[in-house]
Length: 232
Image (cartoon, rainbow, N blue to C red; front, side, top):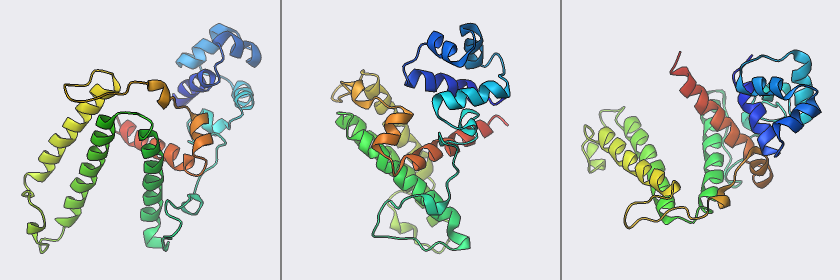
């Protein structure tokens, strides 16, 4: 059984503020067995999988990590809402991947910046924004350099220095963000004083961002699939 099952079972129980004892009683198993399921030490049977899906009101595919959507739906490019209702992409067979990924990223950024506005830290806002701008800048330079006829004077920094320079600047942004979110910001920098303002779970995301929730969870799923593939 997917290792995602143990993680998602634990996540759902904690999000609903259920004790392991209470959840085990409701699901008709011992607390010890539920503990083994949540730690990935035992695999459950099909009957328990269905029972757990009904109990948490999610799909079996979601419990198994096969779908990022609690109800197990798979989204298509046409089902992702536009980040800007005044602009509509013309989707052709050759542009489906671009349109799909653009919407995922744009909509997810909408969620991200909304959460960023709640953090109460100018350091986090500045450095997170800088990190994202540097990432786009770095990728743009790679695309720009694909054609040797493009004038490199468009940029102030030589193309041989740009990738490593971008990485260094991004690492600095990341270090400042790491300090700020842990409450240990360096001199002259502030930090997140009230982490409760950033209390996040699947339910709160779905309720606060109903149009863009699907984009966010699919972006997370796709990103983690890439990370997991590094072990293959």
